[in-house]
Image 1: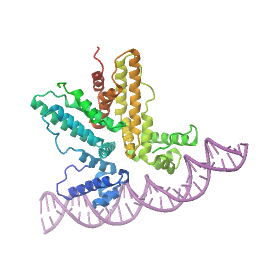
Image 2 (image 1 turned 180 degrees about the vertical axis):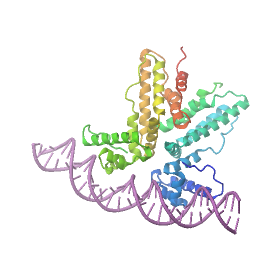
Image 3 (image 1 turned 45 degrees about the horizontal axis):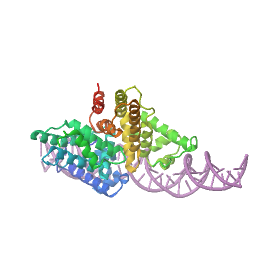
Length: 188
Length: 188
DNA sequence: GGACTAAAAGCAATTTAATTGCTTTAGTGA
DNA sequence: TCACTAAAGCAATTAAATTGCTTTTAGTCC
């Protein structure tokens, strides 16, 4: 739900949103996700439950909202001077973060939030696309070969995510590197 | 949860499980997922809520259980006489089923069910692997080239799933075919 | 075949979350 | 400063989740 797209910074709405998000993060870090309820969050955030119900609709929407926020990258991929290492390092870090306990929980929250029509997962996909785009542009600026961004999504990002979500074990570092190598021109 | 792995067929347990599953399917087909509650399911199935709580733990576990059941393929991939068409047709059908409204809902249910440690998603991955395996074995019997099953998962199944779960639009039929073609030896 | 037992289901009371009408308050703009 | 609107608080209501205890059922052993 979260129809509040233009909140004036510093206003009451913004403060409530911040404290609720903070409360969710704090609670999720100390207790089991299934024990977190809206009344609990409300108490922790110093607001009333009805405020949360009216702004977010239900727990899943709220958790999804917080998760999307946390999954937003806080920095562009590191510039290592080479396409190969840029992409490899970025992919390895991506895989690690997503495969971690909190990472997996956030992905689940994001996906659950889409049940009622939200577009949370789309945002995450967008973040990822942007990150790959940055690497792609750097490659282009250097005059290096680089595959289509969508191809990277299909052949590197998707397998990583699939393994994390559906398979017994998350992809190893070697596996991730192999996925990347498969895409890049064999110049070594 | 569902610690009931060996239920005698025809026994009371089996009957209860069947009627609860049936009730869930029936309710999900007529109403919004967020309106389905355990008391409702219990009434529909003719059992008491406590039975469901004791057997499945919570709604998510139950929905996940039902979803896994429904995602189990009911037949091996069609044998078309050629590797290329076997895999292409299977992949297209897989993509269609998963991208449909009910398909996506089931996937979400399966993933949510894993939050409390379940291994529902792993089962689905296993089903998929088995299906690809069947196609791979047929290819081998015919003496045809065929990639590793895990490669098919990474390069065909994973992108399909990723697009369905995270992207704006599910993969088109052309897109799916392109993913398959990318893997098969260009003999045409 | 009939009693015995353990597992599973039913019942009912209790707790607690979800939900909503109404009131109050804090920012916004005249 | 004053009114106005949107968001937050309050409180009562509804309904779901949860659990101790009882009853039933199906398999087992005389």
